[in-house]
Image 1: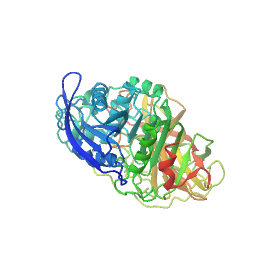
Image 2: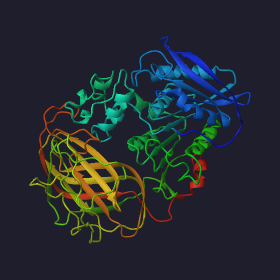
Image 3: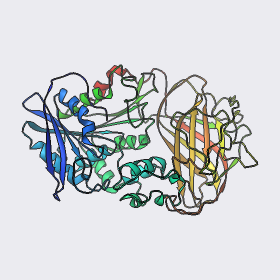
Length: 527
């Protein structure tokens, strides 16, 4: 989380504190005070070591806020056992009470945090309706919310990475961990909570019911390249009180790799500080979403307005078939990766190195709202193997901005009782967004795949490249097509599929509509 950095009053002092949790665990904390005799405060709790966040705390103090940074139990200098997501409500209430009782604190408190710390902030606010506001950045909201996509598909690589580094008693994962079956046995010895992660509900019931009732203001900040972008949008959309969403062209580190690049030279901390000042004054009353248009420095207000609907098709029309084989899964690519000009059958045994892409032209030629004759390609056979995906293009699009999630309706057949449908959309030679939707139960003729939100400029005549596949490994676990949950499966089967139609509902904003100057973003979130 990148904290406020704009110059202001100097900090008066820093003091280490010991707080006491309800069960007697000692929570190590550091308080950074501003120069004023009394002050509003920001509470941040983290499992990553409070020392890393002291520069942010000093930034808050420079803006006139006291900032208390607390190590969650079992981490940093705190005692007790760290069991992810288990103790943050009660421990948060104890930290909040201690902060309010600190001499100088005027009782007005904003809860803030990034990643796991965002869960701490939200959980603490739901237990205390008197907090002034919640600042949740790239939120890792709960066990099920981090282990599963909103469509139900199981994440894999990022969960192995986090739990092997931060789980209790964790040790580095073996190189073969992502290929291990079952997924629930990928880490040995398993950190406490790892096995339970895969049986957690996709949404934590108490959390989302509380989010719907929350009345204090929320600032949700995320990145279109962050794995939790969809959950960040859902948090803002379902929050009961005033809510602002800011989505930049960022990953999980937000603007740290390119400070100020899309905010007129300012860091995201300038947005935090402006919103927090408004929150302690009771000012934020509105709702809305602000989405960056890639790295152009342009921003738009994204709403739920009418979408532009287009179709996409492979060059030979429909039906188009492919085989989703978990023994040779379609490989995941990093966000924004170059799109192969021709999508070969790049599936390979999970322990092998993925073969290189074969370049070829993919120019679409049709126009209108249907795409009967686009010059795209189905995943081509290699070494005698069947295609592992369908690739299509849309017709030429009108100029504008895509700001929000794309909704892709796949009309297709599968014989599997449980199947993942992967949709990867590209624009101008690079991946724009990928979504994975898990369909369970009787085969459905239509599957609706909603992508995470995007922010991208579309030139007049641009076309979208659409891949449809059955796996996205190792970013996501391989669906076994047996009916068993991917996290617990030990047997894998190939699934033959046929796609009959593709329809995309695009969050298209016409040129010049709903634009916001980058320099105005800090003020915009306070309204």
